[in-house]
Image (cartoon, rainbow, N blue to C red; front, side, top):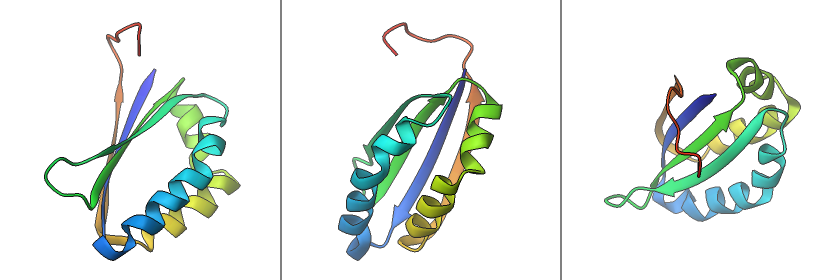
Length: 100
């Protein structure tokens, strides 16, 4: 299993637009082949900073999503709202809580 974390810093004036975009697309992202789960977190110190945490069956599944039409729609729309470049990384999960 692969864990993907994406930390995004938004222009504070664009946070509502990001949340609307996330709400409109989250079900479609979660329905992508190989996506086991996806959650959104908000920074406790800066309300304009969010992280997505997604779990994927494999790196190949994540890469297939990143090559999909959906990603081509969502990611450019999200990037336009940034105040700073996103930071993303993937980790292989070697031990996971069964609750998930």
